[in-house]
Amino acid sequence: MLNRIEAIREMNRYGDEKRPFFFMVDFLQENSLVIPLKQIATSEIQFAIPGFSAQHEYMPATEGIYVKHRGYSQSIYTSQIQNVIQNIKQGNSFLVNLTCQTAIDLNASLEDVYFHSEAKYKLWYKNKFVVFSPETFVRIHNGYISSYPMKGTIDASVPHAREVILNNPKERAEHYTIVDLIRNDLSMVAEEVMVKRFRYIDEINTDRGTLLQVSSEIEGTLPIDYNKNIGDILFTLLPAGSITGAPKNKTVEIIRSTETYERGFYTGVFGVFDGCNMDSAVMIRFIEHTPEGYVYKSGGGITAFSQEKDEYNELLEKIYVPVSRKY
Image 1 (cartoon, helix red, strand yellow):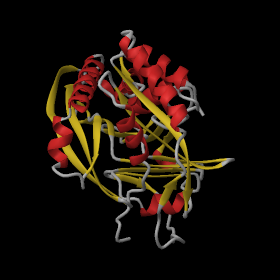
Image 2 (spheres, rainbow, N blue to C red):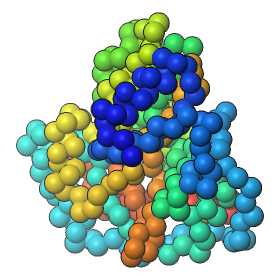
Image 3 (tube, rainbow, N blue to C red):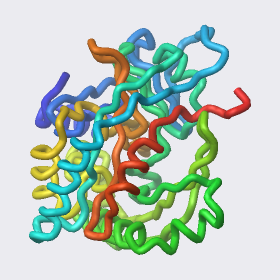
């Protein structure tokens, strides 16, 4: 594992050489992997992102996959969300992404989950954790950098679900805040930053049905020699705004004083730089194998408009595996 300074140096070196590499960075940017693609050992790391993958042949042992949460303490969550909302009322933050670690029952191995998951971004690491993320962090293509913050989730079976999620005042305020934050973040590394698409909806199939998620697209223009500073660019934007809040530094302090576990690589980022272009994901939808068993890490954005019951339900609603119900 590399520390922040070492990871930036390695990324910049490979970027200058236009050498393709895989990277993985934890939430606090204390531990990173930066590995040339040719050196990836699929016995330790398997990933799939649009246009790139590194994985070995595998015959899943499970014919059907499901995950069942054991619940998260309501009293602990009440204490946590009250602390967050109090900080918001005091003006310390406008938006806080509060996450929790929930014990789960899983009828499959992490590698089974990896191979059966239908997600834009997938990662399996040393049988320690698996990620099946729908959320792009940043994408670089032909000198343009884009980010796609995802804020707003609803069960598609809710009557008029699209209208409900788009017209919800809390969800609207949360999304406006994160789009503004990401636009400011991109402005630190790019010029001509603009919102290209605002609050569009994606469908995500899960083992329990379909979810709707709301995203936006923000784009900017990078300097012509951006490849030589690819590490500096990436780490300037970390941690991801969609899984922290605004203002970012103070909000991270609130998160660390409120959450009762270490996020580790959960809500970090991973991706590939191919020598010119980059694609990367926020590490959400995360199952980890701990000494005490499997846990699922999930959460949501808290604003002044948040209702505890709704936020608690969203926390549990996000505990799923993205496989078809017919599977």
